Image (cartoon, rainbow, N blue to C red; front, side, top):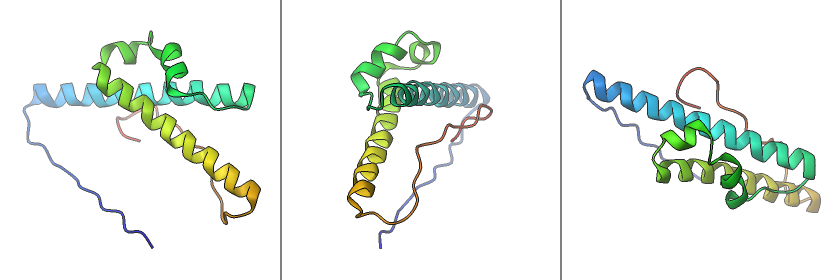
Length: 116
């Protein structure tokens, strides 16, 4: 059995920095949901995976992508790609009959708030 380790950091920052961090996390969440939506629509229409490079060209003109630093935006989009690759791997294992249990596609983050 695997053990997952997590780390929670509490930052002590002034109000201006706090508002900036809240804005950036909200934009990152919005970009995650947008990329997930585009990837999910492509899968439902074509039945195939949408790689990061193609998703990038569909999302690069969006407001969240333009407002975030480019490395942050690209890493957020790569998280969606990694989640969908895992989903397709589980689909293949289910077809082979080697996986047991339930699984589902990645869900959207809530519209309000900053965290998934």
